[in-house]
Image (cartoon, helix red, strand yellow):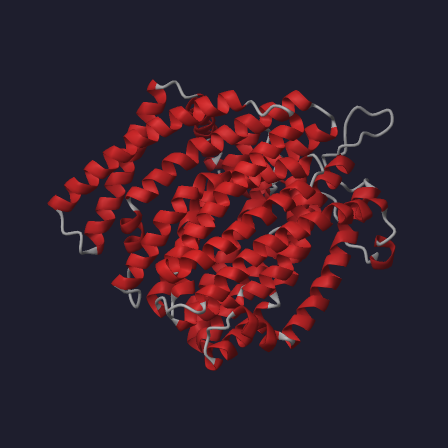
Length: 560
């Protein structure tokens, strides 16, 4: 078995053969990454509480994230993958095989990757230097409610964190290559390494350098995020070339840049949303920004595991089907993926709402994170989960537009949703404080999802919405039954144990979740829910495949 592992070419893993298989790989890695993220947040909450240091830490992310999202995500999610996928899918003359095995012999694909790398690196470095110089002015604009001392800390954190967009930018292009080739294993490990870097910073850098060590942990995470993907991209045939000047004349790069512009404008809207939240949160009581981010991170576990994972997995498929004008297959693929996301997210939302207090207490309730922080966090979490179904389907809906090489409609829709978000923040913040920010965010998310669905249907005439509605109804019924069972178990455990201790509250949470999953599974089986049987079949196949590998590996032990 050990011999097989050592002989296995880890960096040249085979591509995922189906959307569910790809989503399973991303989901499992995403789960590990999110669990590490929860551990990270628990360590942060325990060590610093929801106070000034955490406000500074989260505020410092805003401008570096803006650079990364503008240049890399704008290119990657909307433009790079569709164009790159079309290049590696082209067939050689007189050869029925395509070039998806690697890009070693594909000069156009090489030029596109190298060109995007050169351009991204140049602009990220230039923008980072400019923003680092003007960081004092920017932070006063972003956090007008912070004291001068607090703003000085934000400036220090921000300048160090400007190193991370460079490494994440390179890593983002590598990730686009791996995604296009459907090599999701290595791609999915990158976020895990990113969180490990941050956790290392909390454990060690903070002891040496104080709170500023948190910023260096972020940089370390970004470096690891890049390094884990490079060997896999190299094995696919990538060879770096300095073709900066030539890149601006490349037809494919021009195509990517043309598609990027509306997408970058769309990203600017989401970034404005984050800036609005930061600006208003800075005027509230100390720790409000930290509470908002803690609650959002908790609900983002489900968003990342289900919504983002499936959207990433299906994007290359949708791009390929759109390029080949396979309309019916495009609709079928979209519908099945949409329904599978709903199957996971709706019960998760109900579970999280019923158990919101228990989740916050188990994950964050220690050290300097006091009871008042806990109450505000689970109140925000309760609001967020109502829009979780919308947040989780937005990545799929947006990528469906991008696969059709339409980046304008998602921008206009995001603009409308952000206008509603800002209006609601202004109306609600005085009365509801930080909870008002969560309400505004959730309402805007539901509106954005609804508009994306309506306009996508208008664009391709049919989204198989009949099957979507039927599936949604069954999932909602099964989830409601599971929610009722969770409430019953939660009450019984509270009567039988002391839930003022970690063991008591953890037992209450664990027992409730186990019973909830069991009831939901039984209800799904009784309702003959197609997505349940698809998941069951995929999971069974993975388990038996894993058992087969173990058995085969065991037979080789004597020869090791």
